[in-house]
Length: 450
Image 1 (tube, one colour):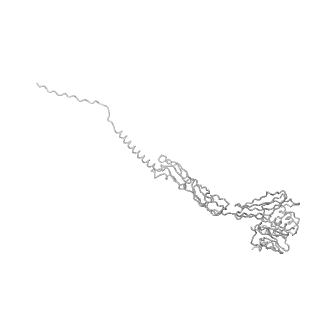
Image 2 (cartoon, rainbow, N blue to C red):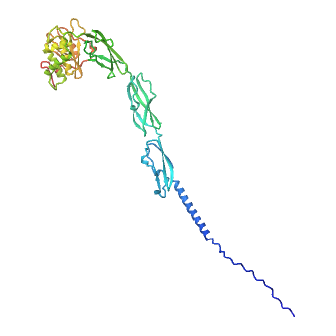
Image 3 (cartoon, rainbow, N blue to C red):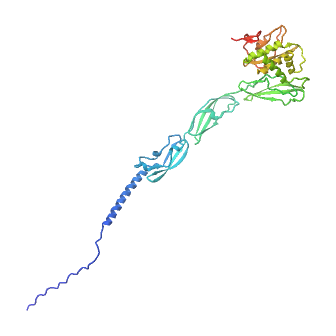
């Protein structure tokens, strides 16, 4: 019997083992990746923005002193996106723009500080104009700062002389003033010099021999007049080293006048020192008597001319002339003329002089020189800024007096065939040259007006 075909044995498929594992989730990684990318993109964008913004800051500026000062905008090379987030810790208004200096400060942009510098430099030299100078060959140059004008510089300027020529011979030259500012910038300014060579010494006038009594003081400078062609106030030295005011005798006094150029003139006079005579009248007593007379013959408001005229007139007609007197001093001569109303030319000249002194009118006494038989004295009076001769002494055959005569008028006066008014003209200041005699009313002792 045929055998039945046997079914192939089929092995059962293996069964998978059961597990609890879940499938992998890629979403978080994707999110992280995307976030990182976004962060990167944002950071890159912000960095690029800030880099671009920060590049606008200029951290150093240099300006010339005196030029307009910068401000915050001067340090920005463009307009920041958010200007409100840009600040500065420097107040530019408080910076001295004329002072060379370095100013350091910070600019803050979006929270970041930028150290910045403002350099103020002075590279411009001072400017000025030279002032021409007139001086003498013996003088030093004045302060250089006074020899320039219109100085222009933003800082303080100093001045000094340079390239000064030898101008001792006089002439025209150029010297130079160097102007230096605080930064060391320098400018040379030419200053023209017009130099005068002074070789003429001063002139001494009014010197006369002196007399003093032991115990009295000596007015060495009285009546001295010193003039110079250029120097308005020459120096005066008085050498009294040979004088002994306590011992009677004759001594030499030397006057030396010196101008600012060093030119000198010297003259000598004799000083006679004497013991006070018996009954000596002190000068104060004489001046007191003169004050009484002056008050009687003058009125307030009178001019110097009018006062002097009253003095000369009064002495002429109130002092009776006597040829010889017993006066042993000038004080006694003047005092007797006032109180006894008598005296000679010596008495009269001092009577006039003391009255003029009390009136505050500058005057001096002139003595006839040379003379053969007799000396004579008269007054030299400064009125209206000029010198005039006045003589109040009685003259025989001449019933008048001399008032405000020029030297020419005095020397032209002749009476009885002679003049008698010769004197050492070089010793005295020159008199006025224009006559004023038409203005003198001798009879009524008044000054004519009109």
